[in-house]
Image (tube, rainbow over all chains, first blue to last red; front, side, top):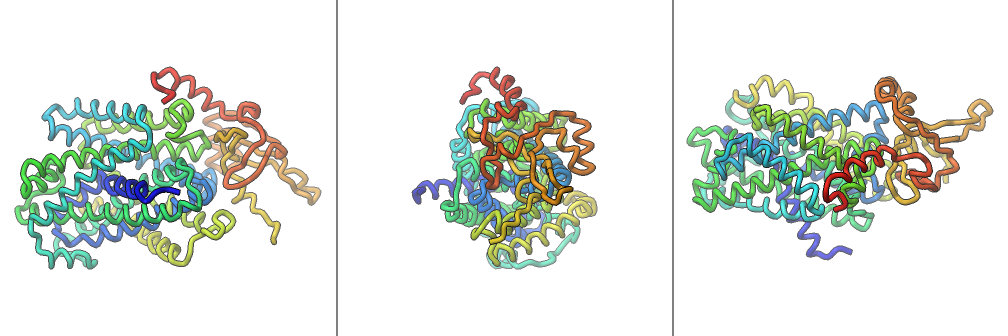
Length: 408
Length: 115
């Protein structure tokens, strides 16, 4: 039995670990462009990640199968392989985006050249993954990521029009460029539901050898952790809406993100924002590298897991190393990491149905799940989000082009 | 209670776990016998890249490119079934998990690999 204390610690880590470069970029850009009008899209996305992460955690606890076990069992070898390739391509873009994001934050802190910092970033990530025990990684980055709560303070200090904020939680078609608005809806929902999170979460549950007894912890982690994580997203969007929109400052730069905290809170705000962003993005880089390795190992039946030491799951170890290096090679070409971030979120939306369909099927299979199979509520929410995911998956690429990547 | 069991969903593509709890491949295909006598049984589990050739067009193409091994595990080696297929012997005895053995030699050269 886990103590309440250790559960609370896990949830704290989940809050800090929720936000990654995709959330930061899309929330701040949405705030700078549309004010508070898109807050509802974050709610939709957070609901989606809660629904599917809960299902994945439950499947992992009851059956010991992680996401890509389920994908292969349900889709078979051929279609499953397509799902794997799609997931890995998206994952690579995500890793590239996170490494680029780390380098940008380090550049804001140190002023050193970007490419040097890319090398430093990837070496540091490799060392952490190689040397640090799994729980430490999760906790250290999760807790430091909580520094992003500075944006909640900033949001309050900037005295937003709370009436307008409240209106933002009601879905609307928005004012301004419709294509850009729709593009941001897809981006915000996609960033919240970015698939590596569920691969990582379910694999972690298998590694920690969850059983049906841990289903309460699963629910608490997912519900409380992701909801509070969503608050960080709200804070980013609200403070960007209060500060950047009136001044017409473009939000799609990490420098402006730091400015959002610095303007109302001064130097300490700036430093907390950068430290929080650095931790959150580094944690996401680690999670997404691991997720890539988990997925391929589960699909092919390799030994996997960080709890087995590095040489105990050697192909898994080589897989995350290769992922990190490939991600590094993408950003070191000099492509704009902000563009890579947006592409990674938009393409992850396209790949989402391939993972969510098999999870929904497995979670409904009574032969597999017994009395822990999906109830009516989980199926209603699961079905609703499958519909949402299909719609935004079809709309994602056309909107990317029609909105000129959100530039209008 | 029904004794019906869905081989396609319950065994095919599930994980293989050896007697020491190591993951050592997937049920890539199944070998059936006695289908013509009206008494079909699972004779063996087929695993390894060459077994993918029996898994549709994509499987055939990938198997042709990879050209890996095919290991046949008689069904009598199966200890029990849950979400994974648990085997009675170690991966080494059954000739499984060789990719991990090879990769381990590489990983062990890096200092700190047993951390």
